[in-house]
Image (cartoon, rainbow, N blue to C red; front, side, top):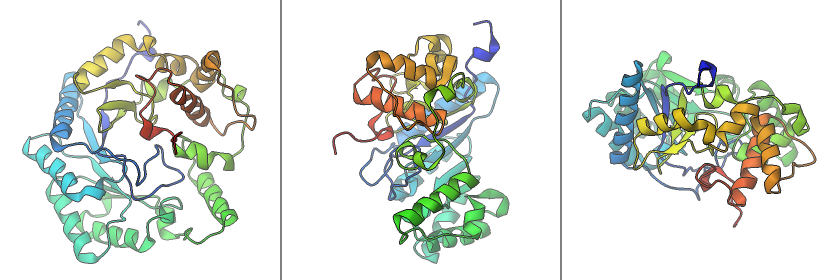
Length: 336
C-alpha cells in the first residue's frame, strides 16, 4: 500500500486482559464482563505474550507499554501477582499500569499490603475506576480506601482515578429508582462522553440522542483500527483494537504477536470487518451485513460505535465471520 495513512501502525500500547470475569456487571462495560464470564490468562501465557510484544516494539524502534486489565484482575490476586512476578523475573518491560474497581479493598491492612507489593513488583501506575456505573456494584468506601493508600504508596503522579470528579462528589446509585438511575447515567455520559461498545450499547446508549444509520455515513474507523497503536489481548490470545473489543485482528497462540501484526499489516484489506470499517465505518458494515439479513433498529443509534456493536452482535448471533467477530464474552448472550 502506497498510502501511509492506510498502513497499520506498530503496536505500542497493549493491555493483557487477564480475565473477563468481574464481580460487577456494569451497564457501561466495553465487553460483557461479569460474574458469569471467565477465562484466566496463565502466567506462562502472559509472559510469552509480554515478551512477544516487547520484541515487536524493539523491531519497530519503540518501547512497549503494557497494562493488566480485565474483567477485574484482582479477583484472583495470586494469579495477578504470579503474572507480575514472572514478568519481572523474565526482565520484561515494567507494567505501565494495573486497572481495578477496588472491590477487594475491604480493610486497611489488606489494601496497604497489596498496593505495596504491586509497587515492589514494578507497577508504574494504578488506575482505579470510580463512576456511577461501577458504584452500583462496588461500595464507595472501598474505592476511598484504595485511593487513600495508593496516594501514600504510589504518590499522586502514579495514581489515576477514572473519574476524579465523581470521586470528589460521589453518587450512590445502589438504591435509586430506575428513573433516578437513568438520570444519573445520562449526566455521567454528558460529563464523560465515551464509546458505546459491549454492554454499553445495550444498556445506556438509548439515554443519548439517537440518529439514523445514515448520520454516520463517512465516519471511517481508520484511526481506531489501523493507527491507534493500541491493542488488547484476551485469555485466548485474541487480539482486538484497543477501543473495539469484539473485532478479532488475529490470534496469538500458534503465531506470535509479531506474526499477527505482520499478517494484519499485509492483509488487512482481506479482513471482512477491518477492511469495511476502515473504508466506511460502521455505516458501511451495516450495509454489508444487510446481505445477510441485518436490519437497523428503528429508533436509531447514539454513535458509530453503537451501530457497529449492533451489527456485530447480529453477525455473531448468526455465525458470520467467526474468526473475525467474537468471542462470546464481547457479545450479549443469546442462550440465557
